[in-house]
Length: 253
Image (cartoon, rainbow, N blue to C red; front, top):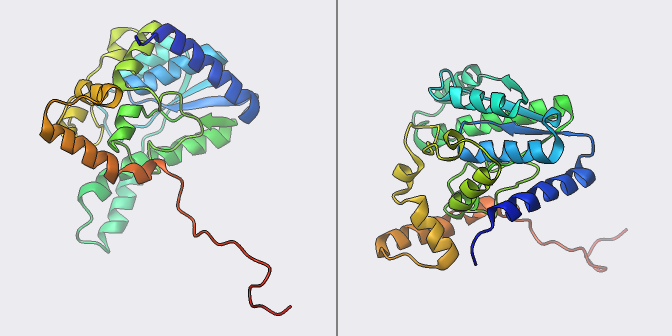
């Protein structure tokens, strides 16, 4: 069945309206704007669903951000309020403290710190203005764990988590977003690499595998499958010990 971007766009807008009616009546949508397609599409969906006056964009560079002009252009295009919160001082402070105790504080632990600091900032803004934080992950990223737990994995509502990258782009076009927001090459924002460089395969290949189960390269298929299994914990509720008190538990009252 062909993907009907306009219908899906309208359905998401209605879903956002219904969700806020129950979970945040009178609240604002708070969105971390990276300049990428996902945050751009989520912001545009929230504007259509809630009105531009009820959407707050939060830009969170870590020092200098080479593509912050894209986020600023989106703010202007959507005509939404925004704040810029630079996380560099917080990041440098945390890195300095951890480096006192751990000689090996490098690699993924360090790479994942900025997304977690950004989520802290988003929730601080949200609580300050009576907001709800939008998650901006998509199905393709979630499928292979290309997100940071308690970082960009977090949020109060998630409009795009069931849509692949290609579908998100189609929804962006249905929203009338200019190409600079929809077709921008996705970069991790952490190490200066494109998503596809980091993953070792294209999103087009991944999306086809997700929707059709087809991946003609066995090495890429194995890579996708391994990532999917290894990272499923990011999307699941925290496991809890299944204790259930019974009538006879050996205690005397």
